[in-house]
Image (cartoon, rainbow, N blue to C red):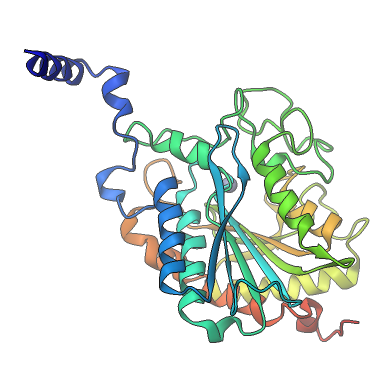
Length: 336
Ligand SMILES: [Zn+2]
């Protein structure tokens, strides 16, 4: 008699659409099943390691606010050896609803793992989602919820929570609940703090091994460089020589993917973003890409376009790999 009772309850819950019934879905809409949720990201990185054990090493950067692992992977020849070689970092999905970016990071991992000759003498790190809590929330009902922030209180905009010029310039909100709420302090979000700690750990013997970086977003089809907090082209820590490296690299990448190259603040002023911190505090050449949009709300690119939307950035990422030993070399300069 017990079983029929449960069945009857389930039917009733289904009929009246209660939260309990909805909570059981917890995944992308069927038409977008090709997208990777948090568990599938972890599984994909583990599968890559199984397939390419000398090239791929998944690891966790730490825990999100709700306790999920923020998964990363290192891709390099002899991946378990910590060599003194140029490194690149690609991060994705700081903003929860920008799911196409997760697929971008997974493509980078898959592509470099399967074709080691593309990254000879380099190590590449990818972080497919910096915001696993927000990602899972966004898909938890089976239809998208337009989530941007993390799940800490009313939600922190992770890309306003970084430590250089945090909350300086009107490019973020001090009101909890706002879409661009910058948090209670720089790195108050466990997700940004985890990435920060990882980047800091790559400074070995006084030298930061990571030289090139992209933070992927959507949408807008833009290749952007620092600074974000000011409209000035040069500012403390970013000289005219630095700017030449940025504009040269940024424009060459834009030629490859068809995006528009510009300084980030040409779009709008943001403060406390990851790019300004990567550059100013770590001297890592840092870019932000806005990928393509799609769907009624702009952010949700149909799964049928994952391949084409991510493939356009093969050229740009390869360009950064090529110059990772000395990014200024692209502008005819030498490194000491
Ligand atoms: Zn974004």
